[in-house]
Every structure is written in C-alpha cells, then in structure tokens.
Amino acid sequence: MVRIVRTFRCDLGYGSARRRGNGKAGDLGDVVLTQTDLEEGRQFEDDIAYGGHDLDDHRPLRAGNIVAHSVPPCMESYRACYWRNVPNLLSAGRLISATHLAHSSTRLMRTGGAIGQAVGIAASLCVRHNCGPRAVYDQHLDELQAILLDADGTILDDPTSVKATWRVKDR
Image (cartoon, rainbow, N blue to C red):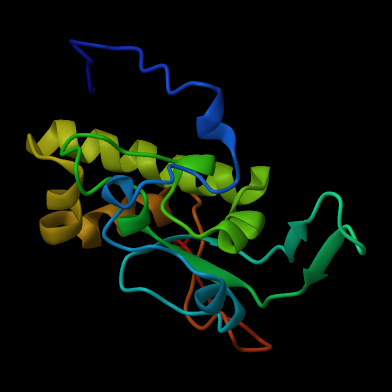
C-alpha cells in the first residue's frame, strides 16, 4: 500500500486551461506532441495511452469557424507528461506538452482519462522507487507499461494499421 505523507495544492490559474497548454518553452516536457505526430499515428517507445479524435481548430471571428480533419488512432508519450524544468511534477489533461493543434485531439475526456491513469501509476512508481518522473522513463518504463496494461490500460502495437493490434493483459 502506498501512503502519501505530504500533499500540496497547486493553483495554476485560469490561463492554464487554454488549449495551448502551458505555453512557455521551459515548461514543456521532453517530448512535445505535434499535429504531425497525430496525423502519422506516430508511436513512441514510452506510449502510455491512445487517442485519435479529430484535430479541430476553432477560429473565432473568421469565416469557417471550425476547421477539422480526422487522424488515425495515435499514441501519447509519457515524456509529454512531465516538465523539463520542474523535476517532480507530472501533468495530464490539458497540461501535457503539446502544440495547439495536437491539444485539440488530446484534450478530450477519454484520452485525458487514459493519460491520467498512466500518470497516476507513474506517480506511484515515483513513490515506490523514490525517484522523479524522468527516472520512471529512464529506469522503470517497462514496469509502468506492464502495470498500466494489468490495470486495463491500452497500448496499440501499430496505430496506423487498419487492423490495429492491441497489447492487453492475458486473462
């Protein structure tokens, strides 16, 4: 059983909920998800969740208010969920490291929930191994993905395939 001995509240303010996310280059993770990553169904060695919602860009005060196009199922990188300049901070939802258009796909509840599940498991590994989020990637990635799959998480083996194969726990 994991016991949290210290907790803190971090008020990121209203601007943190914008689709662009955290905004400053120093606040980004080791990986910044891009429109191209999603359109190509790019896989990362540290896949933790899958998405694939249409890219949609809301352009207020312009003709054709919403511009959207479909993307294949795609994977989300764990390295987009911790920040370069804050050694002990994990992020999920709208605060992952992604460009404006990539956020239009990853911001949805289904994808955000899958990322949140993986980040929660990563946090428990940080406590278990007395390490930071980057060390989970460097030293415990296989364990993170195995626990995630054991907890009914989903990682696509080939997200660009019409018949994508899924890694799931053997029952």
